[in-house]
Structure formats: structure tokens, C-alpha cells
Length: 292
Ligand code: BG6
Image 1 (cartoon, rainbow, N blue to C red):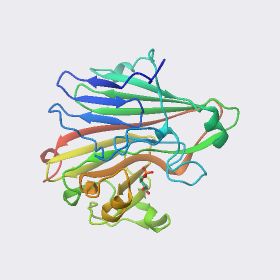
Image 2 (cartoon, rainbow, N blue to C red):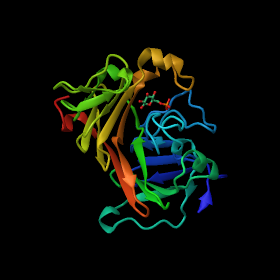
Image 3 (spheres, rainbow, N blue to C red):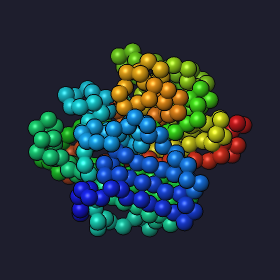
């Protein structure tokens, strides 16, 4: 295992030319298709310096999503320098076809333990398939002598052409907690979700497959998740965009966060137990899966 120090980034490529790039902090992932088009959003105002995660990519929210316990918002994991495991365990046989992968590791520092006194080992495996699919697998193990609980999210910044032309399918009729109304619980109506103002919600017990349709680019992100019952949907819209220092005033039009997450019911791990949360992202032409 080597420190990120001195290593700028890890690049995974497939034979077709798709790529995934991870910079020295796990929080920053870039993912490109075989035409070199970036599929994840990164702000032009992103600050590429510690101690805060960069605005964009797929920051990992752990051990909390939001700010329920007295830790930094969305937990410390996304603000950390992770290490690379140079001798990672191999991929599972039935999961290895044409895949390249990298394993990043996180353990709590002395400082982290003061604020969150639970020892854990976090292994994040990022892989790129021969078909261009991006897979993130988080394994979190309790190496403490007491149980602990956490919430978790892959804060996935999707790059879209124009937010007003985007819709999400798969969250219709679900209950959600609305962060804009003190996490009050509401029920979604029967239609696909579209955007015309700020949205900051946690959809509960959502299906394992969710589609984000970008009408203008005629492409659909297919999000598959396991171990992640909830789905966060976030777009800051105009006013909040202006208030964020590391985000352009107009950039809310080109991004949408749709996060596979475990929030409403925290995950509890007994000593020695391990939890796995898996996220798979693919992009398909919209005509293949909808009328658009
Ligand atoms: C969202 C939260 O998922 O993340 C929002 O629900 C928050 O309330 C947003 O503003 C971004 O958070 P941060 O800490 O990266 O600015």
C-alpha cells in the first residue's frame, strides 16, 4: 500500500477507449465514455486543495449523510486522503470479464477517533468494465469491540445538458424526506420527476434500478444499486448556486445529483461484521429505453 502522496491519479481504461480517473482523493472520480465525453459533473469553480472534497465526481458520504451527528456535513470520508492497495484481493470470477480496477483504503486517524470513536476499515473498489460500466463497491468493516451505526451515500454528480430537459424514472409514488422542509415526509405523485426549482430529497426504499433521462443528449444514465435502499436527489437551483463558493452561478443547469444511499435506517455493524454497498453506472442511448 502506498500513499497518494506523489501520485496524481489512477486511470482505468478499457479497449474501446472509455476511462475512469481517480485523483488522490477518492472523492474525485471522472468517468468518460469511448468518445472521451465526461459523464460526471465537476464544477469549473471546484477547489482542488485539501481539506474539503472537490465539487463534483462521486464523493463518498460516510459515516453520515447530512449533519445529524456532530461531525462535518456528509462525514469525513470525502475529505480524506485515501491509500491505494497495491496487492488487492482479486475480482470474483463471474465479475471479472474485461474489468480493470483499483482499491482505495481508508482507516480512521487519531483525530477522527476523537470525533467518531469507532475503528473501521473501508475498502472502496472502483472498476471499469469492457462495456464502459463504472462500478463502485464499498466494504466497511467494524474492527472495534463495540457495534457502530452509520449512514452512507455515493454523492453522484451526473453531467446533464439542461436540467429542465431531464427526468428521473423509478422514484414515482415513493415516500421521501424533504431536506427543504426539515426532513418532513411526503409522498411522490405518479409522474417521472422533472425539475423547475431547488430539489433536496431522500427517496425511501427505492428500487435497485433508476434511470435518469437526458432528453437533449438523448442518453440515459442507468443506476443500479445494492445495499443502498434510499436515493438522494439534489439540484441546488439558482439561489443556492450563487451562495456556494465552489460552484458556478449557472452550473445547476448542467448537473444533477442522484445518490445511491442508506440514510433513513442507519446500518449497524457488530464487531467483525462487514457491510457492502454497490453502485453501477451505465449510459445507454435514450431511444433504447424510452420513447425519447
Ligand atoms: C445534498 C444535500 O445531497 O448535498 C444538500 O442534501 C447539500 O443539503 C448538498 O447542500 C451539498 O453538500 P455539500 O456539503 O457538498 O455542499
